[in-house]
Image (cartoon, rainbow, N blue to C red; front, side):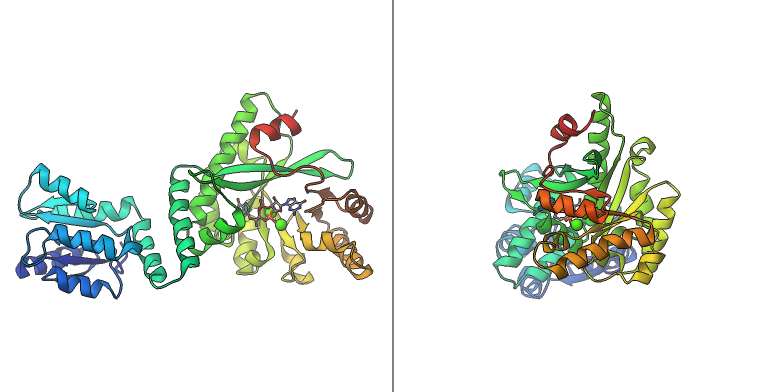
Length: 398
Ligand code: C2E
Ligand code: CA
Ligand code: CA
């Protein structure tokens, strides 16, 4: 348990405050004790804890009133659990606790084992509670744009828990025009039917430590899609690549995620990692890619050419290929320099003996030029947009 978890305990009984601070202190919590709800509310303005324990029967302002005011005034702390403590154990007190916005209810005399279990389970059950509180603190005085980010974060937590994220699949085509692979791309449609694009929710997931559970849920989703295709008698005789963020470029994280994928599914999986993620910690990234090699899993550098990879690094990185950033694919038509640049990037594949995939191919002229230049694989709207798994199976799997 992290010692940084903070709990506010509000009770007019001073002796009890000391006992609770001591009991929860032993569990690694830092306990701020308040003897009246006014004082607590005043202090909570400066930042709120990870959990609040509040007595119901207090003079001046009782626990119910405190919760109502806390919930109304500190809407950004909606994820902070409040546990009410009552001297009377009866159903109507418990019900009223829920109605005013408390999350749990324990009775007096406090059994410290029950107290510790309630606090620990509330925090462990929803490990994001404290993260939500932290984020709430960050968002507290922010503008509507950050409020929007916070709302997306909260909905995204639920979407991950409920396995609502889906994958769409976009085929990769070889120089002969045959489907030779696919990229799996995350898709999220909210309950109200609105679509949140990945370049909005992925950065939020990365920023607020949701990217690992998000990617794990996509790995699970891929396993389900793959097994359904298999049950339907469809053959997947190529790799499907999934995008990985920088957080996965640590051996522990990568192997924990990857080991959850069944072996027969993992055989068809590869990963795309952007140059910028790789260069956040190159040595660690190399270690992960090498360890993945043992499982026969391939890595590609995504958005290649954006300026991070020096040629020396490219030589050291045990990657199977690079995906040329769409901006270079677009530039070929603009001028001779753009075309030369593209041609040089593609020729790096030959020098380092790695595959070159061009993405964002939209026009037949681009396709022809890229094939002439020696590109191994192409991907883009010219061939197909990313499509749902059933449509992908119908159109591209035998
Ligand atoms: P990316 O990995 O570079 O993915 C390619 C993006 O280009 C996809 O956008 C794809 O739909 C789009 N695209 C494909 N062909 C064309 C084309 O011909 N023209 C144009 N204009 N666009 C094309 P999408 O699906 O919106 O994804 C955007 C980015 O979000 C991805 O860029 C990737 O960085 C990130 N992303 C998507 N899914 C995941 C995921 O599961 N995990 C992580 N970590 N990132 C993801
Ligand atoms: Ca990609
Ligand atoms: Ca890309």
